[in-house]
Structures are given as C-alpha cells and as structure tokens.
Amino acid sequence: MMARARPTFALRPYLPQDTEILAEIFRASVEELTEDDYTPPQQEAWASAAGDTEEFTARLGKHLALVATMEGSPVGFISLDAPTEIGLFYVHPGAAGQGVGRMLYDAVEKISAARGTPHLSVDASDTAREFFVHRGFTPVQRNSISIGNEWLSNTTMKKTLAANEDNP
Image (cartoon, rainbow, N blue to C red; front, side, top):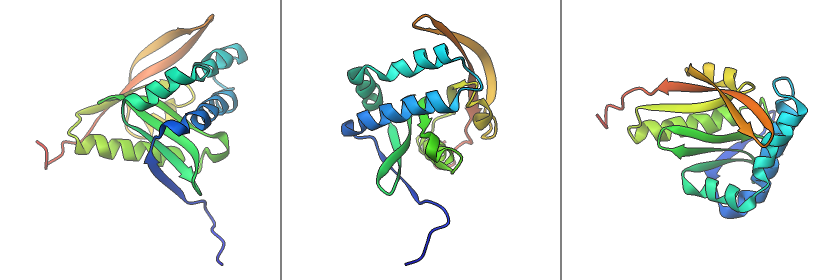
C-alpha cells in the first residue's frame, strides 16, 4: 500500500440526508475560520442560521448544491441560489487550505459556463473576499446585513464568465 501525500477529494450532488453534517460544517466554518473578521456575537448570530433544519434543507435542495467529500465524508459544500448567485459556500476548518474550496468553486463555474450563464455573483464574507478576488471576482458593493441583533458586513462581488463558443 502506498501512502498518499495529499488527501483525495471528490464531488457529488447534495442529498437531503447530508443536511445535519452540512449544518455542522457551516457552524464550524463560521466559528473557527471567521474570528479575525467578525466578533463572537456576530459569529454566533451567523452560525445560528443553520439551526432551522427544515429551512436549511429547503435552501440546499432548492437549487444546485454540491458536496465535497474526503473518503466519503462531507468536508465542504457550495450552492447556487439562482442561476448566477453563489449562495452557501463553506469548508470544514480541518479541510481548509487543502483545495476543497477551489474544487467546489471550479465545478460551479464550469457548470455555469456550460449553461451559458453570463456571470456569477456572491455576497462574500470579509473572510472569503480574497478567495473570490483570486478567482477574478470584482467588488460591486459593500453590504450590512442584520442577523438577530447583530450587523454583519459582506461584499457583493461579480465575475463575468467567458462566452461559451458552443452556446452563443
């Protein structure tokens, strides 16, 4: 048996039975990866969005959602909330920085381009902003959103996709 230097990740569609583990990934990502950009009360308010299981399931099941796995276990996910809008995009802190986010995003961009989608947009957290800048997104506007009793800032960003020659 040969040892692998890097973990092997795979992609698959979201399944309703993934909801509980994806909610855990969502909460862990917010709680452990955003501490440099958001206060503990902001993080708590943000993480609470995964508390309503029915709503979280409905949001993930409504549009395209992809799950990244490592040896069959979910480690991240991304959703398109509309043909041009990246909605939920979270990676477990233990898998952060290993290419999971890049793999998820690249898949959504390829699918969107194949569908003839003219652009992608995202309301990027302050933590995720640089990730999107490195993928060619540009800031469009700064936002303040209210969650519970907290205000959180993010940035609406947009990327024009290359015209697909097969789908003019």
